[in-house]
Amino acid sequence: MPSSIFNSERAIPAGAWRATWLVAVALAASSIALLEHVTRAHHQRPTVPEDPVWWSLTRRTIEDDPRVIAFVGSSRMKLAYSPEAFAAAAPEFRGVQLAINGAPSLGVLEDLANDEQFRGLAVVDLIEWDVGVYDSFTAAAPFVHRAHSLWRAPGAIANRIIGSRIQEHFALLAVGGRPLLNSLLRSHRWPNPMWVVTDREGSSHGDYTLADPKALQGKREWRVKDFFSTVPTPEVWLATLDRDIEPLVKKIQARGGDVVILHMPISGVFAADFDQGYPRAKYWDVYAKRSAGHVMHFRDIPEMARLTAPDEMHLDQRDQATFTRSLVEAMRAGGYLKLPGSML
Image 1 (cartoon, rainbow, N blue to C red):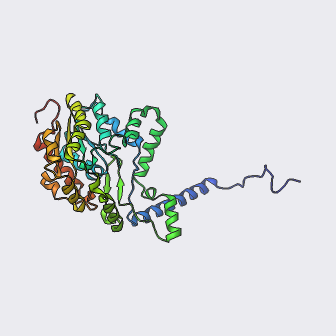
Image 2 (image 1 turned 90 degrees about the vertical axis):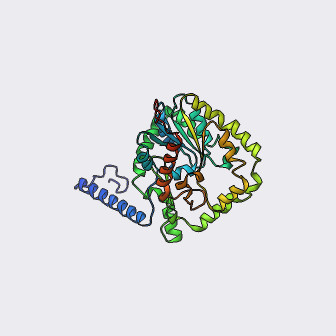
Image 3 (image 1 turned 180 degrees about the vertical axis):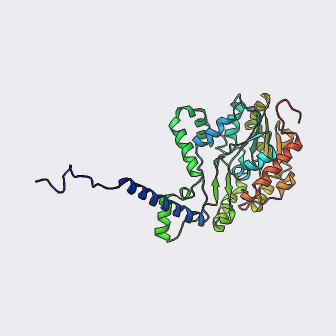
């Protein structure tokens, strides 16, 4: 007698399986759509996570294109630059976002300087305390190394391209399943939205109306803690720039490219501490006079100088267009935006 438990020859029930699958798919799609609606109703936005593979795909597009304006820096540049505003203000050029969150700019600037095909303009995000830090060059190394060995990872490339297309449309993916369940089960509420998200162009957008004021205050206090104990003398600071940055600037210029070094907007207590710790007349202005590159300070650009950073260091998304437009106008006025073979 056949076992009713282990009978491997049990017949599959007859029926309209196609209709069953269609109903299951429709229910799943409806559930996802409902979760996505609720997620967006709680102000969460889609985001494309930053990683070396995705950054590398952008980095590889700038080779041998002298019309490229490469925006190099850390989170300050990622949150300030607007691709749309740049395209409108400088349609004859191609802006490329190469800033990396948490990584000082020198590692990427060095990579561009060593790239014989780069003949564009590098706009470098720099503030005084970036000079001489231990990870000035090494923080960007995983991204730079991946860009030079990207051909070894075709599967990762395909996966990242497909993944980014999905991520840019679904806010639910920005929350993640585990954080969502933890928040619902433990706090009985929807997770707080991220106030900073990143698009497929590599630019970040900060909506600081969504930020926790206590979290912002904590960041401010952490930044200025022991601030003055790490300030080098003007002589040491300038010598470090001469050693670390100037050879890279001259290397790019020797190929017909150019470099703009920009002091990004800062404000509040953070800016006041910089004014006291790094008096501009002894630090920034001296470097501006001796550098082979074009050294700019946000306070010398009227429209940019009026911007206020909500966390004293990063701009809100509502100011991205103003920052980008004012930067383009200042570079045009200074004669730094030039097409190859043109005097314009």
